[in-house]
Amino acid sequence: MALSSDEIIKREIVDTLGYKHGSIKLRIFPQSSREDQNLFSDGGLTFGFNGVSYGSCDACWYIDEEWVDGFNNKKVDKRPIIALEGTDALNRNSAGNALYQRFHHALGAVKNGLVGVYYLKKGPVQIQPDLYGMAYYASGVEKGNYLVTDDLVVVRELLKRYGNKNAFATFTKDYLEEMHKIFDTKFQSFYGGDWNEFAKKRSTIVKDDYVIKYAGRSRRNFTDGSQRAGHIAVGEMFLTKYYFYDKKFYYLFPKMTQEDLDLLDKSKNTDKEWFLLRNEPNVFIKTIDDIEGVNRNIKRKFLQIKDEPLKGNAFKTFNTYTKEIVSKLESGKYRIKQ
Image (cartoon, rainbow, N blue to C red; front, side, top):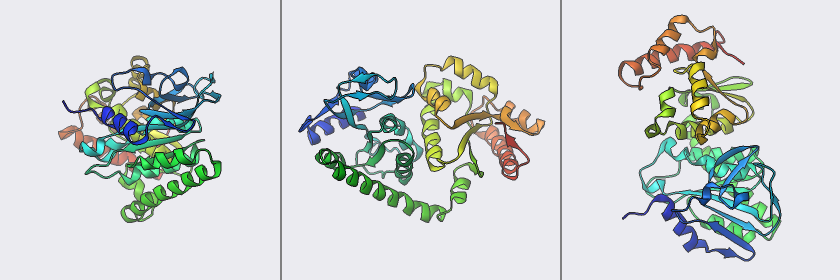
């Protein structure tokens, strides 16, 4: 029987790095365990901040020293240093925004001031340069640093340097700069080094003090578990948030209404992805009801396809009227309600 992605990653961590590095210990659980779902301060591998949980990690290295959990201010006698989320996705034909889906799992550690590592085991598919950019810019915004890698040697080098504060910081800084170079190479070649060109290709509108990312999400996307739209939406949300870290971020779903949001808030109040979308600082979900000045006929067209999958005539309708909305949001004829 083939091993799961989690089991492959966890076995590799133990085989490559072992359980101890001097005074630094490893916390890791078998794939069958549910303990990783608990907060780190409760013995698990989940990190959160200000009451928001960002998902469980696969492993964490810690020392026996006092630490205060940023999720609930709980004081414990174990200080986490490096939290790692891993995936075998590069060997499973995952590409594009599918690779963003687990980005938020190590983000909770970064928000707590730790080093977060998103490890993608080497495979025939390459790591998306966008991931390096997301993590690089997140490191500039949050208290900790976020590293993306396909080589566990990066973690080994961090563990070796932990006792020397300057060496640890220098290695981290240098690695972040290498990540930025990878991202910038694509940014220059694919977008001509122009954020406005990036915006055009990534369904984004950039204004002086805010940015709008628009997508064809429907309420059903979030209630039908087979669609995994929540994971994709969260990944795209963090990409936009960190690339445009100095702007307010409106995430526009024109196929949805305020009533849809209210129903999802009630029915999905324990759903991790929906909770992140609704509670991430400086991110605001907007619907067709939040577009000031929108033509009644345009709104009616979106309401007609609000529960339909984006294919066939529904896809044509969505594209036609989204283009009109985007054009008028760009010109200022339409505005997003504050």
